[in-house]
Image 1: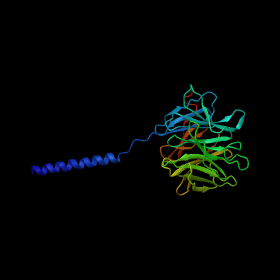
Image 2 (image 1 turned 45 degrees about the vertical axis):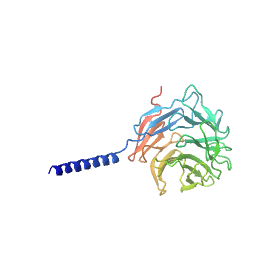
Image 3 (image 1 turned 90 degrees about the vertical axis):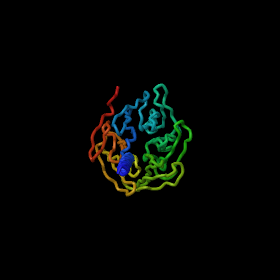
Image 4 (image 1 turned 135 degrees about the horizontal axis):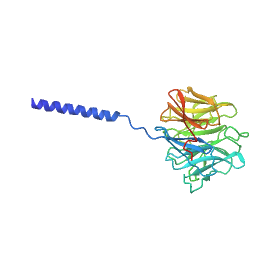
Length: 299
């Protein structure tokens, strides 16, 4: 009887340990920290999507970016800026977030740079570059297409990645480090979202082709869907597209005050942060709400 009782206790303890280990294995893991950058002009915010806390990105004097991104460790800023007296020319700059050091121009000193994006490991900066035509991608002289390029943050390794008809822009990356971007035919309204499994040289694969306008593109954290914006005459529309089925879902449309919405996924595909009326908004649970003005925290 004594032995039976011990066996019963051991079995109970063993089952309890199994339950404990099962609970540990299936307990929700803490949310991985994820930060995004949204802004315009001299007002840019670095936002923690989980806590929704933000900090201002202080910029050197006279810097007024067209596009701006931070490295994943948030130590380095990359931005594009118009050239003085040449609004249709833009160059690429790197700044180490040290007010004592100036921003450095990198890349060729010609044409229009747009849509910079860091690779997942921060080793490369990818961007659209229109070397001959004046202005943004899709705004160029005959056959002066914007192509996809990359460069190291120290200015070395300048490399052209695409050389096809049409404009290539809005680079972004999935978890497998594959390069995803928009390819516009330019001779007709057709646009496609393409992926290169090896960012430096593989043959591009078309994920979807559409006649819908695509001006900005960001991937969801799981890489299965993308968020995109389309600029109209006086509105901006933000859609989500399933990259496996090609199905588009309209999320929000509003009267625009600028040419960019900068839509970015939050912690998952159900949450989208975007720029509207010089403020950060979030779309979640099928409704939009304003989080804060870009002027908040301004000294």
